[in-house]
Length: 301
Image 1: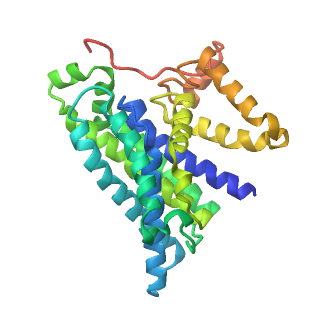
Image 2: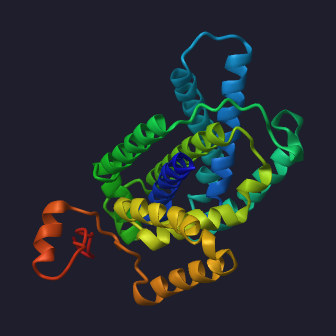
């Protein structure tokens, strides 16, 4: 039971952190992250089942890695089909397209045979364990943190702050918007793959619009533009429903109340655009503050 909760925490951290790249750091509204999760989940499951059925003599950990790479790659390719035409334009076109994409993927999976259709996909090898979930989650966070602090990450943040100014100083905005969106999709697919190999069963209805909303809520609660915030929020929002299980009839009420209170008293989320730093934590603690703001790009800088 507890291992399951920890696995779901790891999956939610990967999903929320990846979505934060597109929505928080890039500033593009994406409402269909569950679609990439579903793409990755089914791709990873079918890849692993195919390898095992053909008698490929590989350790389970290697099969899992191959399957997750396939999951991320297919999700990335799908994101390019969506992102290249929609991200050439300014505005909320991506949000509208991803909203439709999430539903299209769910309906598509529901109506094709090799995914199990509406009956779901069974016989998925259970390759996800506590150990590999932990290390894969750490690896994903390391990659995303390195990416956001690289010159590419700074270019993406500059687009969020002022796309016109970023374009004026020579930043290829369309390229970086597609890069940020496809990065989010790749790791969204990886998260879906981990999820599939723990459940060992996939139902298309798991990946409905509300699943995308749940991931987006984690990002908003933690802070749009903060990987640390996504990690903390994913932990809290995964454990909280389980902690309130004894109050089943009031669980959704309490859960909703806490989220509304958070949005009222701290609308920027737990961390805003900040990242946790122990050095800054100790410094701010002396001044009765906990979170240190990230240096943001200001107009004219």
